Image 1 (cartoon, rainbow, N blue to C red):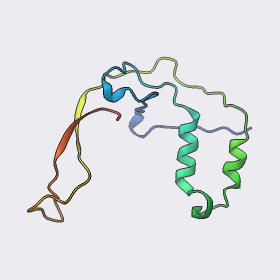
Image 2 (cartoon, helix red, strand yellow):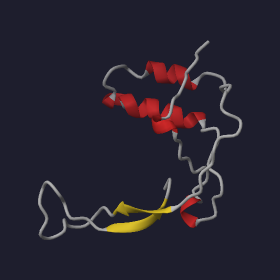
Image 3 (cartoon, one colour):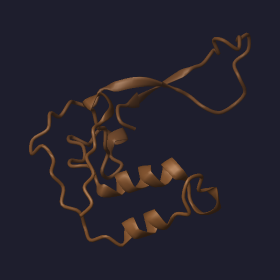
Image 4 (cartoon, rainbow, N blue to C red):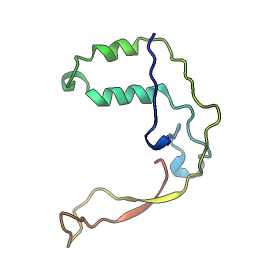
Length: 114
């Protein structure tokens, strides 16, 4: 039997199950988190194919063949409302008059978890 325990950084999970968080229509996040998120994290940790750094990928292939997991999670987690926040806008040329240590950036309003 394989058993995996997951502890979230800062005890927080922000999951948008269907892409509606940025529309303002999402009222509750995904809970419990999909096992696919854990698998994606394992793949990202070591890479795939020729980009594997530690293994040949056989462990992940074995992992893919396992039956669906049994998930033990808190039945009623604390849900926090989605609040607008500002994030850095990426892309385009660097702002003029900036220094390497403190790059001038512009921000845009965004929804939490997006």
